Amino acid sequence: MSEPVLILERLVRRFEQGGQVLEVLRGIDFRLHPGEMVGLIGPSGAGKSTLLHAAGLLERPDGGRVVIDGTDAGRADDGVRTRLRRATIGFVYQFHHLLPEFSAIENVMMPQLLAGQGRSRARARAAELLDLMGLSARADHRPARLSGGEQQRVAIARALANRPRLLLADEPTGNLDPETAERVFGLLVSAARDQGVAALIATHNPELAARMDRRVRLDQGRLDHVA
Ligand SMILES: Nc1ncnc2c1ncn2[C@@H]1O[C@H](COP(=O)(O)OP(=O)(O)OP(=O)(O)O)[C@@H](O)[C@H]1O
Image 1: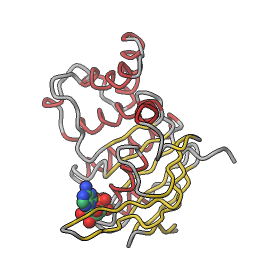
Image 2 (image 1 turned 60 degrees about the vertical axis):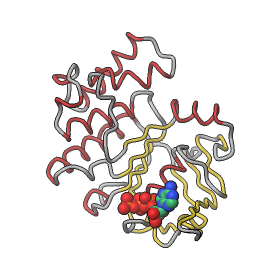
Image 3 (image 1 turned 180 degrees about the horizontal axis):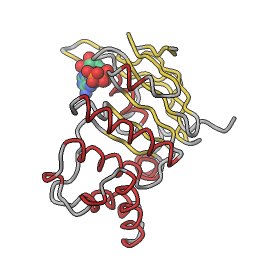
Image 4 (image 1 turned 60 degrees about the horizontal axis):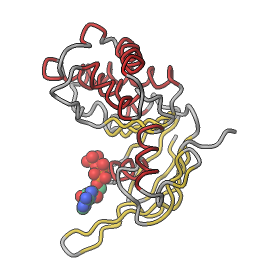
């Protein structure tokens, strides 16, 4: 089997709360292989966001290893982490975090321009992804003129813009009504499969989690593989 895109090894993350140390991740072991899609489930407050933030190099772990595409990224310097974040990882949040003053297509172009891509190629790639998300007609609209589901579809297109090997999504449809959530989640899954990207997706929704290749459950600081 090919090398995992993401390896978490004995990952530890703790926070101080009111003078007490809260160990949220107590030695997490996890591997995600190319093209694989995994659902991350677990009760509220279990640490799903904390795990995704460490895996997505948004925060540093307090112990253990985060290996992204063969690079030991947990302890790497900030420059290496930024490059990996831009080139290898796509992140979708519960709230879209689109830039309000830019159009949908400009939002999808942005990560490509930051990674050094030329404007015309970035625009072509953004147009292709917006088309994949069924948003060609909305490309020139600013986020405020889009519905919640459309905004989230733009955010998914943006996450895929730099052809990441790893897609991390934190409750990507948690802010949408059930019907829209179902539709947007379907688009996320088919776009990820279409682009051949490995994905770890946190969701509270068991039906959505059931669409993944497999599921892992986070509880009491530990990760269990579930059927
Ligand atoms: N920066 C922080 N400082 C202190 N405590 C934190 C911090 N971030 C998270 N926590 C705590 O870590 C625990 C896990 O939070 P996290 O948001 O990762 O859970 P979650 O599983 O994503 O929850 P939900 O499903 O409700 O989004 C919580 O008890 C939270 O209060």
